[in-house]
Amino acid sequence: MLFAGGWRDDPPGELLDVGTGVGLPGIPLAIMWPRTLVTLLDRGGRRVRLLYRVAGMLGLANVVIAQGDALAVADEWEGMVVRGALRAPEVVGLAARLLQPRGTAVLGLSRRAQPPERTTDLMEIGRTLGLEPELVEVPADILDAPAWLLIMRASA
Image (cartoon, rainbow, N blue to C red; front, side):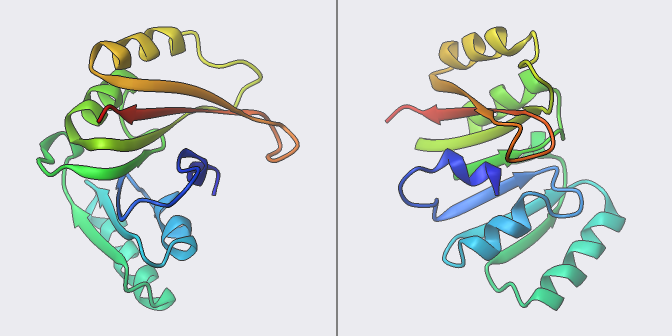
């Protein structure tokens, strides 16, 4: 649910969960936003088969499951979430390429007291690629430790 913080007003109409694994954070977001079409993308066949079962058991009509490599995706997206699926610089480049104008990507950076050392570089890469970065600290009282999210918004 922390990833929902990337959207202060309305949730996106469509959302890509890159490297979803077992469906996090995509499945909780699909439950929270039933009008958002959530695509769960993962390379692993076993994980994809698990996702079909989970989405079916939960009756999630707003979930699409896709097997493939995120770097091969060509469509543009209103929203994107990534939690440890790719190296952070790759994610920033992917967000710049895949986000629609005014689209938002939320990248889970770490669960440590301080943001990763590379955060300033990632934000600068994002700016260079036309994204507006925002670093968000999730306080330790919400989770068992602090967490850091990097929100990237595409220009209009």
